[in-house]
Image (cartoon, rainbow, N blue to C red):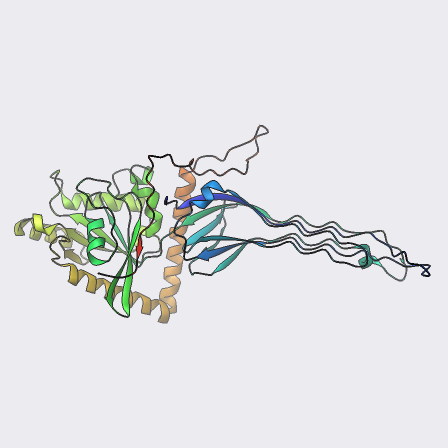
Length: 404
């Protein structure tokens, strides 16, 4: 399955049915009077969060969704049937933006949650409605109103407690495969990770958290270089970021300079996202001697005195238990504060709103223009990339729920 985390779709709610103009004509009733019924309301369009979905790939091939129109009223005061609502399934974690107004319509964060995105048109009135003591034979009706039409941008943001950040080949995939049952591709070359992956780190039967891994960032990522910027939005809901830095890079570069490069790109993409709590994890300690390790630890402690610094080796397991226990304690502390401290919860909601705005701005800057017809009007075709060819990667998000 292809991993598609952004899509543009056009939705059209149903039109209301027209009111009916009709008069009774029955034997032995000289003046039957009006009996035109109302039309039916147009169908609404709803988005529904479905836990079984983890990609927006379906919207690449089906960019237009319509709800049913209401039926027209008829004689004998018969009201037309209302149009059926259209319910569109989307993955949990989908944000919905109106592309024309740039209004955020809502987030679908829980399975089964529904969001009304287009309201159907109201029904028209039949001539019976206009009967009065001074107008016994009204010939007036009203037409049904058109339903709402919107061009929506869907953005999938993975729901994770902890997000991994770093250069390509910094050890992010190895770390997540070591502390959870997730099995992303691991190799000794950069850009091994092509799509995000999720792993659930289980500490105890009732204590666990979700970790998200995204492709590595490189210099110029905020302007679109590399793969990582396409997936940075998946860190938007991670309340803690782990910045993985290789202790002894093969190219001989300085670990602290590498860390500053990545965080500069993060801030350029979203200054609000860079305000999230960030912890430093120095990786691959098994290939670095003690002097190099201690020098790097001291340099990071001096450069970022407010952050904890961990030294780990995902290959030997050194330092992993201490890291995982500290992460679990931090996640539980954050969850408790969100539930019990209204001021903290409000500040986090405001920060997330700013991050969402930055994510939207980045997406709008990078999106191609929507197709236009010969008159210059935008068409309903999706502006997503064309269908993948046989050589494209077709891996999906791997979601694992048990720590091995």
